[in-house]
Image (cartoon, rainbow over all chains, first blue to last red; front, side, top):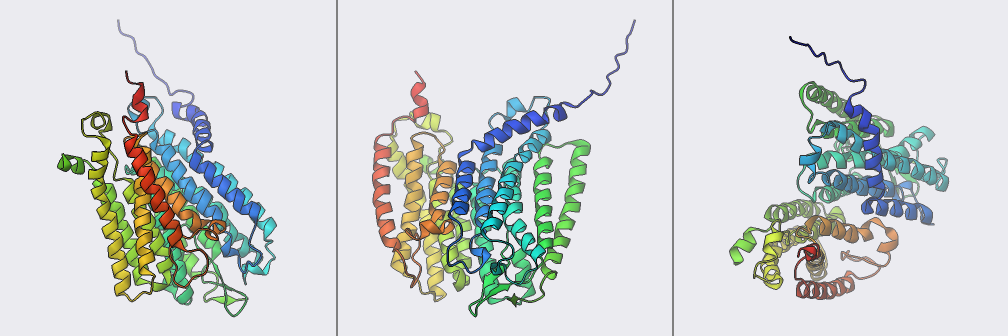
Length: 289
Length: 201
């Protein structure tokens, strides 16, 4: 006598059912991480102290959110991701797949993102969008500049940390990458000061997760550099999507893996197009107001 | 003993970060306008490289061998030559490019950065076998503070900017060097087994 056992699909897959619990657990770990706490303290202090009395343009005070929530946030999520490596042999046999655990880790980026939104509100309160410190940008472009410099890096940095933690074994990778990005942004910004009209330098300046858009002019006023702040946000969001997909790719198998690789290709092409549009859009030459 | 202790060092980390520092410092040498931004980053990377010199993955075994912590630290300190040589190479490149930097103060800053990374690693080595990642992060956050926080930069300068007003970096680095030497001496002298091992009967 034989019997046939029919296995139907479960009502919900284990990954989906446990995702909220995992995400909450990882979020709790992030908010207790000393590096993330230091980042929040740093941005809170910077926003509490407010801009210097002699502030001549917004770019002297708006990179703090990107440095703390984005840069330090990247270090924090990198540690968070790496801290599970030692227990991988045990965690690896649970019904939850590695991409599901990675997705839960990516969800913690919502915390620094929310902090970034709060930082933006406080920044606008301290330096209203109507202020001449923003230079010749239109009101909507001024908002785009702030979103691209304060909010999106707060989301992208932690996502980059997760991707880095999933793929790179070297324990110092996060702070090394932080220093390299800081150095790159500084270098291309300094190059932009002396080659403000160059299209190539504009592309190099925007080929970063963070970019400055204005410079205080020696002759008075604020000079806006080439580039579209709106398309730059698109480029940044494409980088965020690439970071998530690269993180999810680790441990993905079968159809999921091929879907992620396909999505990566689409995101890569979109990022490239948005970078070109960011460089070609906006002011076609530096403008002082 | 010297050979095996040296061979077991985290050479890929030390050499890799030092090489990246040379690239960053090389860009600083190539672009004079960026030298006061990129050279401090280069030195911070070298400090982070120095923080990895004491990493010992087999510390559970090594820490109970007859070779004491003083001798092991002395041998591992040889690896500091890599970040120091990298920093000297960058300064030489900047000099050959005709950059006008206060060279003695820059050399002192280089030595101070590297020794600070090593000292933090020495202190953390009393708690863990692989202090590099933690020490590197601490050193990066501390050394970048004057660059990132203007309120700190008003009081502390870690790189001698040519012709700049404000506090001198020399005083900072002489104090750091002294404190680091004391911290290294205390951490090596007081280091028996890492504290996590004290619970082993």
